[in-house]
Image 1 (cartoon, rainbow, N blue to C red):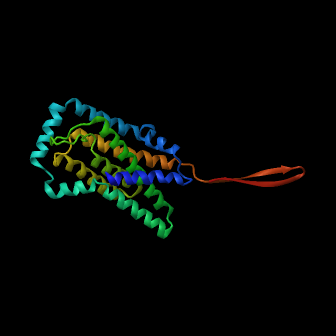
Image 2: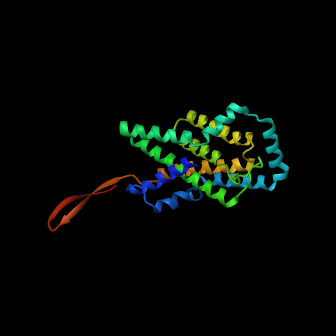
Image 3: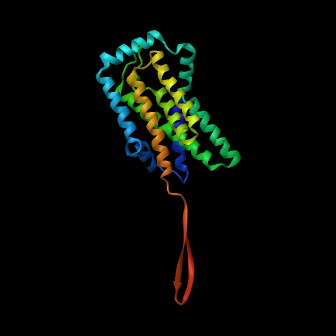
Length: 242
């Protein structure tokens, strides 16, 4: 949780840059609802989550007991999933891309670092707010009331969605495979229900995709030359936006 708070603070610090203002915060936070290419994913994930909640006694609870009993991932993969869901790959990716930008002055790497930062921060913030509002107990009957939605699944799929859009298909396959292991590991450890990881995955996925598409819609710098007449004199004018 501390790492998530740090990432969100870093995101706010971007407001000091000319390229990002505080007004963008609300537009970016609501991007899964406004990006037309992404809303079908959000609607599907939300619908499946609602169906699962509606059939909790028939599907969700028995499934949680069976997963906790069988532990299909075992101990090793479960620990791997827990670690990867703690924003470890997200942070390593950001540091790597930012390092490439500082060393090689690769602007694309900086944009990728910022995209991962935003995807991880907005999805993490949304999940945290929902946890506080819904207050659902975990299946392990502990004191925690932060079961819905799964923060680990959110972090993992926010990472995978960015990798899938920014890099070759095989990197995307690897990232989504890892994210799936993270989601399953939370049920393997009896820490989350099926609908928890379903909606957590949906949040992470849709933020990564929405913010990617939003970044592609930014108007790049452009320039134009146009004629100017001043009295009897003719000339050329030059205008640019940046």
